[in-house]
Length: 232
Length: 129
Image 1 (cartoon, rainbow over the protein chains, first blue to last red):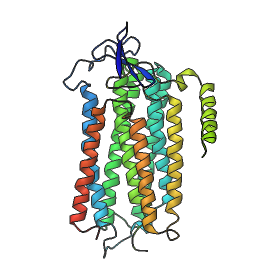
Image 2: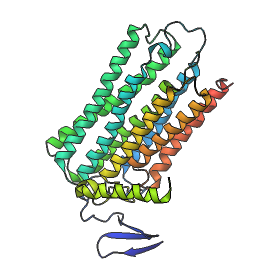
Image 3: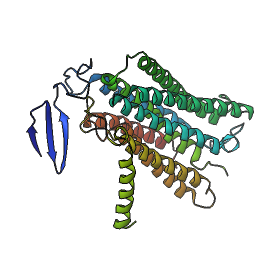
Image 4: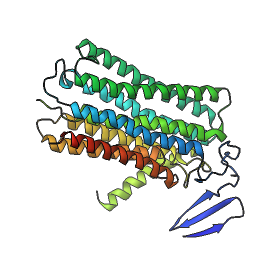
């Protein structure tokens, strides 16, 4: 790989046919609009602290959700459980639709970020609101699901399945709810003109959190809902 | 799929992409802090979403084959598809494939720690015996 200095503030990595202009560390970008970003100062790691912090938080959240998934798997199919089990209460078509909605919210989230990076504030607001609405729809579906489960006699203290299921999916729902509040606050800032192209990293960090709740649901949907239940 | 068919499919996608406005088919200008390469274009984001939806559809359909296929096969296929979806979202939507490797290292470290820790816990509690 050879590195060539450009007349402007960029360094071009010439790497087997794909030459991509990369902004030099600490150099003011010409057209990205991130020069005034408050976190653009040099750091020991060479990357901005907020973005590194959100990745470390997400890494720790893997352990948090892992504990609840492990607890669910540990007590899955445990004998001598009173009350309804997964086979009696799960509604796979309904949960598939809510999973689809959450997947689509990840798409609208990245479209919001792309629009902000292009400086298109109108589309940024539209996609942000769409993401929040998809998230709210997912939460609405979860509330409906929990209500139906309660109607079938499954509560937090009914049996081990109820305890582990409600704690796991409830904490995931709490994460989604926090994400909705975060997205709506960014939408409000965008409406006031306080979230512009130069603040794209703020939206990217919120997006990383949002996609994380999506990938956690990908695991929950497969492991909890779709994997064949014991005790045919 | 043969090489010719792959080229034809790729050509069709390129034609669809070219028909879109520049703000949809091109990546955002400049790089965000921590990026090594530009983010994907909105058109590429939509293509990833299509793949995610198709894989989810296959997953749901597979869960209905319980009784027709061995449970071990269903579980294996479901886990493989979940890993594919997980990797697509993390790589493309969370931009780990275009960001600096330090982010990937931190995330993979946490993920591996969780997987190993809870596999050890479940094994020690005889969940797999």
